[in-house]
Image 1 (tube, rainbow, N blue to C red):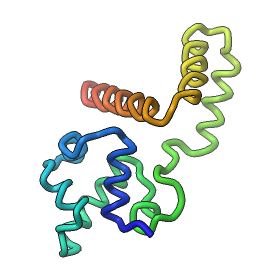
Image 2: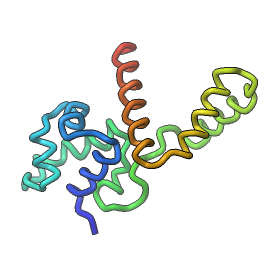
Image 3: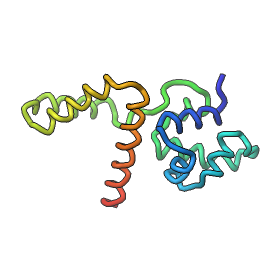
Length: 135
């Protein structure tokens, strides 16, 4: 079974990020990420803040991170809110913007995993930039 430090490396790779990029997103350095991934930090008080930040900032399922249980990511929206959004898209299917989103989703699910990682990385960066501009 995978250890927590191995799951962190898997998460980072799944997001298509280097240690430097991952560290920057978490407000730390490549060296800290490397030390975590190679399990060089031995005291829990060194690791806990990073684990909590990963779960909070990246919406990672804490059970998955700590114990390897469940899915890697938690749902970003409650199920009823997701349903509301899908209903709105269906009701407005003639809206050109919604058509573009639906078409993009169709193509996304046909991509290989590496291409999906690139799109997830780009989209995450775009969302972060929008949040920074709004905040």
